[in-house]
Image (cartoon, rainbow, N blue to C red):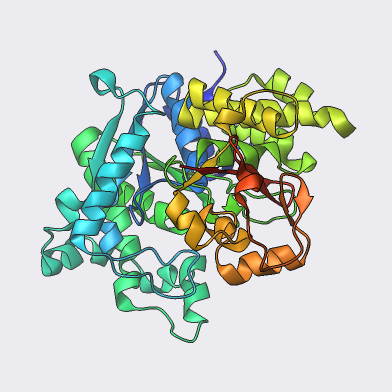
Length: 409
């Protein structure tokens, strides 16, 4: 049977790991590992999807995942990748976000019979005694070494610097590993490569305090071929919650990725065999569109289910005149009263989510990026008529990727 680390390497997940030879040996036997998720929003986004997929691969290979909800660490805020201190969240907001994320996780991992666990670090971090914690845990950390971490160096170079509150984040995350080792025999922390310094702290802490083997392994961040972070849309993040990013919008994002990113995305974001990934990735010119359709369908299926993936695919075909599933196209329903009060095209662009604001909508119209029923709209003051909408609705388009059907109710 192929070793799980070789599988993850071949698919492009692995960035860094500690004690590689020892970790290979450790993972020949069932091993409990964890990945942390800070609940700073009420939904996971596509940036979380890489570690989730890696967790699923690990579970399929016989290892036990712990999805650690950061109900405690979210009260501090991770300084990694941030130029300023994160917004302080209330306990109520954090707890609500944790519950929302827990529901999403069950789509990706098998939690039956404790094959995977969801744990909240608020259960231990919120009740720590400061002096006891600093004597027991703080004494194990070198400030000199901590200051060499990229997340701290970058923040100290900014105008507002680094708060002491955020400086303690590494200690808290490291303590999580020690606590999970005590409670569940956890031996490995996995996560995004921006967490490398924090994860080293945790593995080192377990080794120092318990004289036991502990490991860290990071994953590549989801980047485009030219180094930009993937998963950013005009409406913001690409969320896994269908109420924040509809299955159709989600599907369309992957349907329109750059040709150069298709093979990488297929390897990281789907369970397709690597022979098939390489075959699809090798397609060129117009044929690469078939690979993009496979990518879009597979990722949407994993995140939103088979039925929603089929609807999204049919809607995309309908929009380009190749199918009859127009009912699945994203639709904005507008009451007759609201339409009579304001039927401007710019207003429909904002209400449909195709534009962020009226000024954005006007700008898009002036740039000839907007059409109604394939008729270009060039006047920012243009108003839809009842004839435009008719019985079947008006098809509002922005650019090549933005579509919404306007329907009167």
